[in-house]
Image (tube, rainbow, N blue to C red; front, side, top):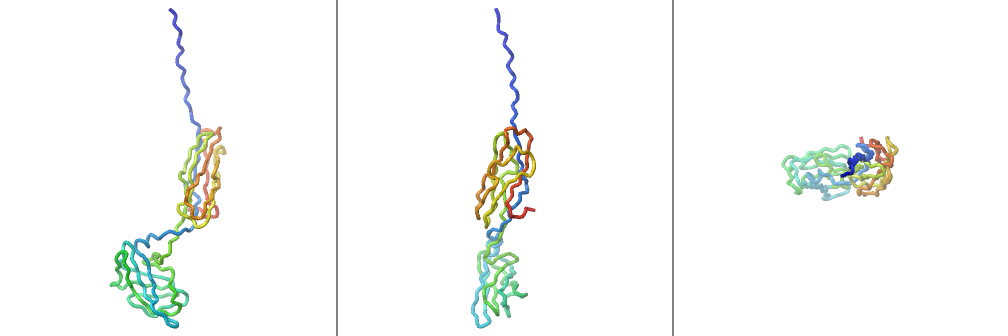
Amino acid sequence: METDNLAPPRRRGRRWRRTAAVTLPLALVGAFTAVAAPSAFAAQYCGGVQYNVVSSWGSGFQANVVLTAGTAGLNGWDIEWDFPAGTTVSSAWNVGWSQSGRTFTGSDVGWNGTIAANQSREVFGFIGAGPSTAPTGITVNGESCDGAEEPVEAELEVSRANVVVDAGSTSSVEVGFSAATEAAATVTTTRTSGSTDISVSSGGSLSFAAGDTNPKPLVFSAAAGAEPGESAVFTVASPATRPRP
């Protein structure tokens, strides 16, 4: 009886996936545009300063100051502000005070230094000469407390610093700002070094309207012939802004 000689099973070769790497710089070129955001200090310690002109006459006026504490309350206060040009204080009560040019500085006198959380207290009064317009740049214990919003920096961000792209394929990251900017901004991506087989296929120039914090896609592609281990470095930047230190 004859039997067929069975051929040994064919060994399957190992399949290698061809990939290329895209590396974005960890330190992006940052967008340092001033934006408005509430001061954290103002919420915790100082709820506001009320400047009241009680009466005025000719070249003089009388005013008092009401200080509202934040959620943590106040246990002692130092207040400072800038008067309009020409305003001076001749006398004051319930406050240790001094004036240098337009800058007025006052501090509690002990018994009026404590203000409970979210409570308001009339802390001192004074007699002034010149314009009675409310002062600006008010600070309490060295922090802003004039109801204005503190500027913070909106920084340029990407969702990932390293991207791997299969040969002949694409991969993306998201680009955006950490906070709302006051002005429109354009973000560009350029190759810094590395293989030309890796490129930006879309999103190389992204436009953001003022206040826009929604991230936008930045897409990289690798040529079909890209070899494993090939890499490139790209810089993501917002022109007309200074580099992040």
